[in-house]
Image (cartoon, rainbow, N blue to C red; front, top):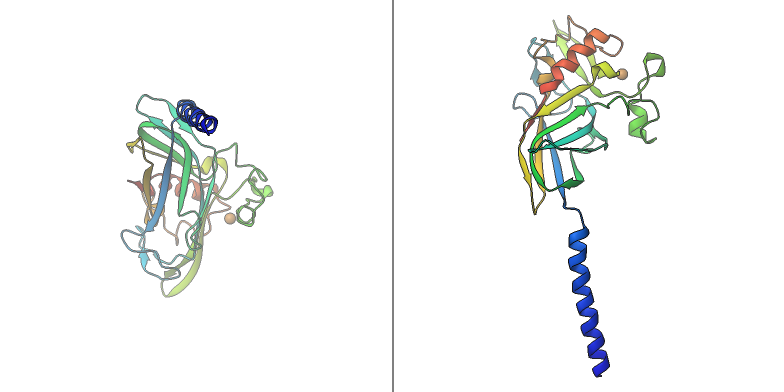
Amino acid sequence: MKKITILILIAAAFQSCKNDKDEQLQPQLEYVTVNLTFDCDGAAIVKDQFNYTNAAGNNYSVSRLQFYLADFTFRKTDGTEVKSDEVFFVDFFAGKNLSFNFSKIPKGDYDRIKFCIGLPPSQNITGALPNTIDNTNMVWPDMMGGGYHFLKMEGQFKFSGNTYGYALHLGKNPHLVRIESSKSFNLSGSSASLSMKMNINEWFRIPHTYDLNTDGNYTMGTDSLMLKIAENGTDVFTIQ
Ligand SMILES: [Cu+2]
């Protein structure tokens, strides 16, 4: 009986010792959760409804809103950067990746977030992403440069009594949308969550007032149109 008690005590002592050691050895990691929301100058996004008017005056609807978010970098106040090579395929109407996590972010104070809408050049190579249906559907034709679509925003717009389709498709490295935000957050003891809201009207304005009727309603084959959309895209997200 005595022997058993001693054994238990030794085991307990060893266990507590082991726990202390684990805590010291484990890097101080936390979760960062990103929550995405979408609107159009305050109005909710409803599929196939002509509820929206852009800066050029086009009355439009949305039937598809898909894109990649990648190349996330979190910068600490001491200047060190924490990078992630994770890629998130977002499909608004299918509800895909409207919330996602980073699980290996060191504790600390952060003051800046950088990421891309699209894929950085190292990942924008046909076949570089896992062979899922979503990724396959986003492939950019090899004969047009290869890689993947960064963005597909599609719908219809009205012009002098008629309805036309539009497709804002972005691809090719020069049209990568790089976003940088001076969002401060602290990671200590508990996880942090970031809210990122995309205002779809920002795709059509600042610095370029994009008119679906006069600029063009299909961007995919025309670099100058994709460049306008890409430059407009740097402020589509508000980060809180
Ligand atoms: Cu396309």
